[in-house]
Length: 322
Image (cartoon, rainbow, N blue to C red; front, side):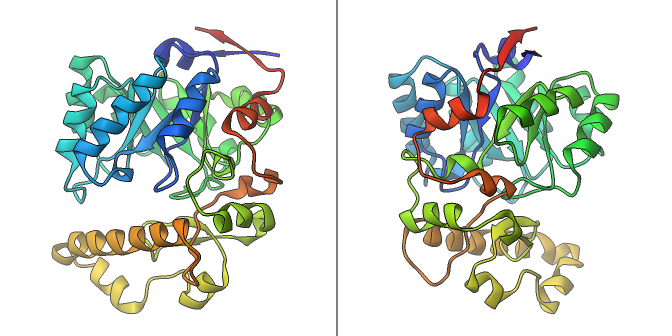
């Protein structure tokens, strides 16, 4: 089976797969291996503590591969390092940026003159046409089965609806684990796939062995949505600790979220608190186990190299540039 994809030409890659940016999981080694396999990957800018360390990280990847890779930037106003992170991406000439959680138009406007592609996360159709008009190069359709900040729609609902509204390529995200899933998504109208959860359980992944083993031991029936980490629904494994703290904001948090003057401040506080919790759980043995994961957890049976995971994901599929 040969599948057509404009993503190949946009990024000059051989396989239209993005190893998705994952908070405190994606690292330089994972991106290098993805690139060497003919695919690509992206790292959240916030995985580096400072913009200067981010610059060094980008330079380190470039020393190991000439292939294109990307950076994920939180384009919401609550990101205090947005401008600095964007400046580094432009100065280091990264191939593409993935925007999340916020209006990406400023990012698009800054990147276009420098030839940097911008892919925008969406969970529904509300802003699709606006993003294309603003100059986005592709849309990442985040389904309800994705890990991290997931949407509410299935691929079958979201991709055809987006296809009717935009002419730019659509990249699917959520529960993509094998060639059959990719073939099905392309039949719906997608031209690429952003894949995260299955790459957490790889040799190159920096997270703890406990986290990796949890991906082997738990199943999709253990995935729940919580808004306690960032105020935005996030898919996590329903560990005993998650069961203990609950998955819904308390009455005070909900009340504060209804008041605009306090909403931004609360969102910043909740996000920082939630990210600290995720970081602590990802790298150490702790009873406060909050591990992000999507429904593709069902396909994880062992911890293997990134390259092998990509080979299993693509199988015998062939891809043709458009």
